[in-house]
Image 1 (cartoon, rainbow, N blue to C red):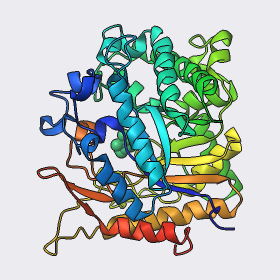
Image 2: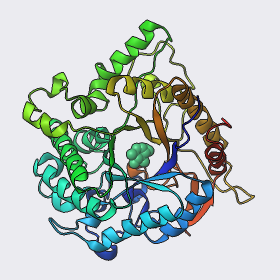
Image 3: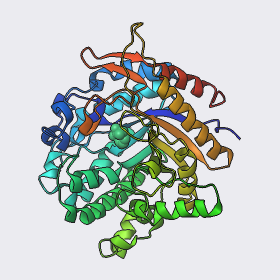
Image 4: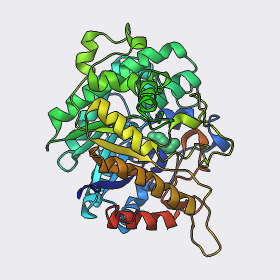
Length: 435
Ligand code: NOJ
């Protein structure tokens, strides 16, 4: 076996992280625009970011040069709905033009409806703590789908609920920067209801048969030993152990995909809620960067000092791209789409004017070999989105963490294809045969 012929090789981004254009063409404020001051390294923000809003043509040309088959981006809710119940057509025009540009370049658009920048008008009503959010999200989803679905097939409702629910409402590190643990259960429920209602809105408004999923994060535990016991222990950890808690998988995806409510959420999610939450999905998307074995969350008998880490400090554990697609497929029985995977590296422009990011090349190579192993074993993996197409605003970390295939000089907005972009181009050209 090898990667399927129509495998969706791609790269990803998110609106707040790349677009900039904070006030352009009637955009409203989001929680990252309004509340992040004082919470981000060096007090950086997304006001300008990569100025992708004005430079998307140049960026799509770079994607075409790399040979991307698909591009995952998100639509900014406050750009499209600057005020309650107000649709900003100019905001929608931007995404419509972006989709046209992608299709002209032969690149399939994969659209995420929510990637963290909640409109301020919704935050003022309680944000994700207020169950009204589900109804508003449904209306927003309907407006986007009305406008784009004549050309867009692939939809993801919500990105990494794990992160914005816990970092946003419990830890206070991401917008809305609250430390309010009692909000976690209501927020969980409202996110799930919003997801369910958005899935229905996509299905009923889509002008072509849609493919719908989500993009939770999939940090997981991989087996310490490749024995039956080792594998079952990892599986248990992933879905019932710590990983079954709010930062893990099953807390979110068991109700959403299987209609099963994990123990700690009984009392929060009713049988009636489940009817909204558990909608049929077409694929199981997830963002995955590493296994949790070396992150101090699980007891690891093989832990060692000096384990390889990225510039984020995350361990480099390629085997997660074999085990987690396999585990998730065996549990959720849906085709797998890797909606994010990648690394931050200490990239800079070298004396020859190029960015020689050999670590990233090796990272992509190793991770994809593991993904290929899953494909070889018959796990239906339909695509891989490298995070990110270009360097961008890494939330509380600001701009000094570079994940891109394309280097961005934020002083001039000059783009440079890193060596890894050229390597990835070759992976795509050979459909993974060069790995
Ligand atoms: C997950 C998030 O979806 C994305 O916004 C973020 O930049 C990357 N992972 C890297 O942390």
